[in-house]
Length: 138
Image 1 (cartoon, helix red, strand yellow):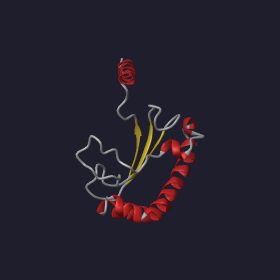
Image 2 (cartoon, one colour):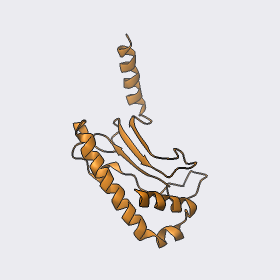
Image 3 (cartoon, one colour):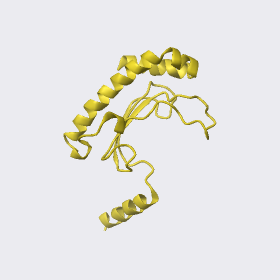
Image 4 (cartoon, one colour):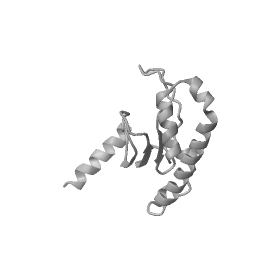
């Protein structure tokens, strides 16, 4: 884990294509380590939540490349690694578990995080969730 953090710290300092290309082998190494951790987390979460059993690492992990088209921040790379574990993978829209690795600092989260829930549900999902919450409080 220390090498992953060290890589992300350096990426934060040198967030440009030239540095990234020069350190591509290091990136591949730390990405493989993170993927190994994600595989172990899939198995661990599946022990108490069978809905995530059988997920592949690629179903849960996010790419390091940022979409800068509509962002004022034009840095090309994320300075964290993230994975989302839920039934049918990260794009399914289901509630799940999020794992985030980031060096301490002033980033969005600024450290590591393990959380559970549903992020930015679609309007139809949100309506169903609110209706269920209302019924549960009766």
